[in-house]
Image (cartoon, rainbow, N blue to C red; front, side, top):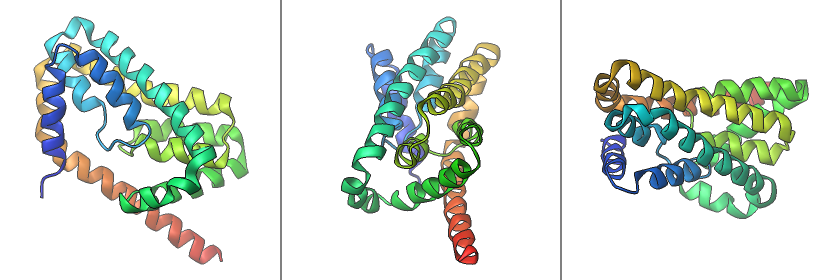
Amino acid sequence: MKIFGPLYERALAWARHRHAPAYLVGLSFFEAIIFPVMPEVMLAPMCVAQPKRGFWFATLSLAGSMVGALVGYALGHYAFEAVKPLFAAMGMLGGIEAGIATVQAKMAESPWAVFLLLVIGGFAPIPMKVFTWASGIVGVPMLQYVLSMLIGRGKRVFAIALAIRLFGPRAEAVLRRYIEPIGWAALVLLAALVAWVVWKAKFAG
């Protein structure tokens, strides 16, 4: 069953629109909170179409993600219990709870251990919203949180812009060709994270 391919094609249609930069900012914002499609799938074709503006597009995407990360943090901190049923209905509750357990474990070590976890998580194909909500729920210090989101997401979007600047349409073609396995791989990684947290909690108890 193809899920990510059709979403990618929709993102491509947005990328060709004259208001594409605004759509990119909006997609980046909502992806950090709840939307399932990573903004890179829209950023890539925009960079192909205008490679000299690729780094500007990456900056716009990062700005949208950062505002979304702050909103996601606030929602996690103040509204998680209220929206739990929504996440459960969307099949996202397990991932959020796994993220909470992981962030809590790192918080027990130090705020900078959380910083390193979030930086690594920002580059992994794991939905950003898992970490934004979990960080707000756990109460990650704002300095470490903002820096980790800035670095973790920044290196992803600027890496896309750089790859397309260097390799042109071939880089976007690879993303288009492998978007389905990339999307499913992200879900498998998320499921593995949930299983690991459940296993750890079971044997710790």
